[in-house]
Image (cartoon, rainbow, N blue to C red; front, side, top):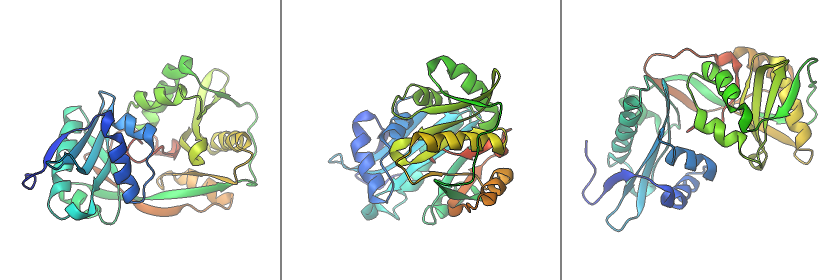
Length: 287
């Protein structure tokens, strides 16, 4: 499979971020500059773009390696270049990078339009994505014996040790960006000296995620603190995996019913992980 005449594939760099952000906005996605940076700059990530002879970007796709788990994201082909095989070339390059980085399980979130492409490259649907709206005024409380504090760089190792076996891959670059971001606090729940959950409060997007917890009462305590931190916001949102049945039932008990969106797809054998501890993702391209 090759690109049409006049187009070329290359690795993206930070100077491409504005153009990639424009492509994301054209398909109705937020730019998320911080997330694009994490899909371009770390050695564990690779972003590919396709450009014309006059340097116009017409396609993009990224892979982030949290070996053994790899995530595919930012897959876009501009409208006037679709149905020419460009998406397949980009996806093949992303898959090659992830597998070369030691990822045996690849996952992504697919729109209805993108699903046939991914299916042709060995991805199978595993569950719908979901979006939960968490309004102020939910009947939530903070559990006794839990302390929720702001993370900083000194807790990065402890946070990674907690996150990796539950998420299924080592996403240290994302965690490092979280704990050093003064505008978006990472709320860490501890019981004694033990980390039992955390949530990244992305105030600008009115979202909490990543959001992990060992039990619903821990998730509820983190959510209560997150809502307390944003008294001017009517609600927060989170993308909870439907496979976290205990978490979904907890939300339903609060009167929150997650709305399905897109489809989560995977290629390769499952990796050890704790789906029941995942209450929210960051963005699809980063997990």
